[in-house]
Length: 289
Image (cartoon, rainbow, N blue to C red; front, top):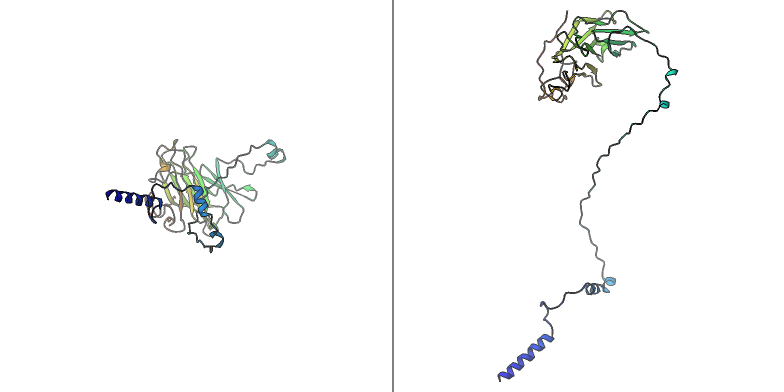
């Protein structure tokens, strides 16, 4: 009887193995499908009869590449002798002679065609109608210090409304060697003569050395007065003035000479709200007699 049960169980096991695994079971002994088999399985006539499926791609951000700025490099071309003007075809004429250390020349913009020449010792001369006017327009040699090759009367600028107000501005070093920015007035009775006693000093800046005293004075298109100050002198800026906010030396200043006494700071200056050098207040008017 036991033998009969044993045979029956053996027959059942053989039948179960030959029938394959039931649906949904995992046959771990089966080898994985090959690429060829998978490809064959997907190649089916369903591709010809199936309804096309519209696939909406997922929106992806558009990436715009950032182009690095390219610099245009201009290679200087050596000038050949043939490209230079022929000096023999020009005639050189002396327009003004006998000047003492001229350092600047400018036009007052009053329509007269006159040119004003700045002499470093402290005079401003006028050239007009083809000749130099004998009398100086301004002579302040009595207050200008020239004990140094880079000191003296160094800059001149006429107010944009010079025709109306008669104001002009100068940059000079005084007898103590300090930089002075001052305003003068033309005589109301003589357009060829300034009034030395009309001096109004806007700034007086201590200069530690006799060189690098700057001197530029210009009005910009915005109507403000621009001043170019040297770094104080010596060599290599030993006091570090050019990189310091504790001094006006080594800077370009911008003043509003039409407001304030004796000037106002333009509201859009970099340090108008603070953080820069606070210049000590000066008298409203400093007049030299």
